[in-house]
Length: 122
Image 1 (cartoon, one colour):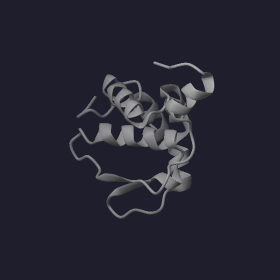
Image 2 (cartoon, rainbow, N blue to C red):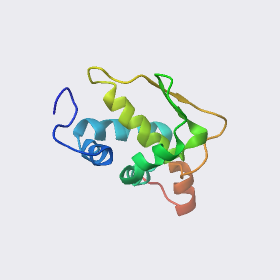
Image 3 (cartoon, rainbow, N blue to C red):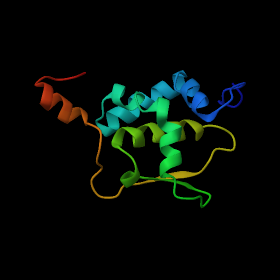
């Protein structure tokens, strides 16, 4: 690792997968999933295709990465926020922000999952 960044990987998606296995990522993941009331497995299931998802939904570049809730399912958005929070700890981190537009759609919240199953998920 160099300044928190993995060394010796080629390909953005492969790099994201490697980063998702780091303890720092996992700590942010747990915190973000809890804060957003999501299901951990549903957020991590987005990681293998996240780079291609972003490529399809990107809206240009104004020097600050803007994540718009209208552009992503809640689990995809959470995964992106986790990666950006992680890179925020590195030297030369990219600036970013999250825009929440109305009700977030897509994915299943923890509350809805528990209600559907009829029991609490810890």
